[in-house]
Image (cartoon, rainbow, N blue to C red; front, side, top):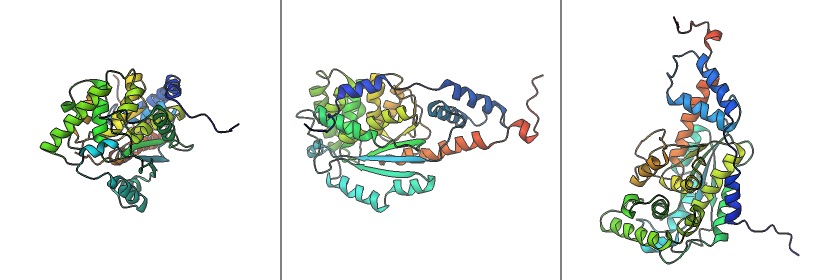
Length: 343
């Protein structure tokens, strides 16, 4: 008899989602009480105040910390790349992974600048998912295993997680998944990705439309759509976001692909992404449409569309600043500064 644990299933993932913890309101109240005493007019730090409150609420403690952030980059290849939807060949995924390992990518520099741990998760790059214009991208077991693998990114000691991805053709998967989850025509969700334009962009729209027509009707829930239209790295992001919620680690979402993946959870449970912030608004037009649908306001918009967790990692700097102000500023009493005259 084998001692191996049974393979995870999508039903198991659905159960985990249903059992995820909610906010710790007492920690949020403690943050609000301290915020009111800090040496500044109420609300003067704008969203930095909101971020400090959010961190405390979802870490479940006060004061919040941002001392051990991690950037997690999940890399996977897509069978739909064979349809010519990207300006780059699928081999670039593995080449970029080596660039991450060598320290030569943008995310490496950003991690150094915010003192974040970078982990790159390579997901069977020599075995692309199936071409979802002909059938489901993954079997149920493949999808569940990828979700479970993503959960391993959340290790003890991490207090903030930035999630992103690398994978040629994954904006095609993101567009197909977003269209199937949230409705609208494929053209509403497809963008240039790695730089396709003109006839190539129109072809990408056609590919996405064909895939959504094939899979949206028979899919009975968001996890099934993820299996049919996603990819291993998208599924891993779903797992990382769930594991972070379970471990009380707030999450910064990167651009279009990461947000499309996470939106699987939002479609299944309207509050599943309450512990997540959108770090930035990607230049990919579908991302801004998706953020509006999710009711998420990004921390910044610098016209970025690189992926590889670059925007989410840059967002760590803002969260660190929010926490530093909240925990390090003096109160009116400590500084001997007169408070606002309420008379």
